[in-house]
Image (cartoon, rainbow, N blue to C red):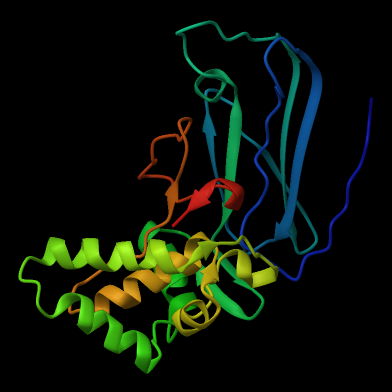
Length: 235
């Protein structure tokens, strides 16, 4: 079976990984992955569970990265053994400088990626006056910061609900806190941003953090700043 897919995207934040073995019990006769980039552009990559390195060539003002593998035997998982993620070969990719719908960033370090995420949140923590008053009503008489956090989280839980809305840059950028306070809903990042804003009003520092959620969450590779797919990221 052979197929081709071509997508045109306005800006890019990441590249799909190369997985020459798709699933347990299935071998691969031949797999090829190619990235064509400007000569002066850095494409970052990191192989996991495999030694595969690219053949790099040039054509005009382009640099061509090609990964190929042939005759890969099938692998299997077993009860209480390593997961598929831990044994299957994969090469992960990430850009260096990038731009998404007018927002520019750099992903060469986790710190730089964090700056990009903070850029998307800038100015989105303002709360309406009625919510500010509610925050102080709930917390001003509490002495223990933990009690304040519990009170505000309880307020969040009882007065908002989760709805996943992700269009364009909305896959990374949260709705403003005022929007959530008015509409009483938001996705994971919008509700997280709202909670951080509530904490800020109460004088407590909250951290807006991306995490890989679920029981199969892989360990963070500190040396490889390659963010994971959005479908698996929570805030």
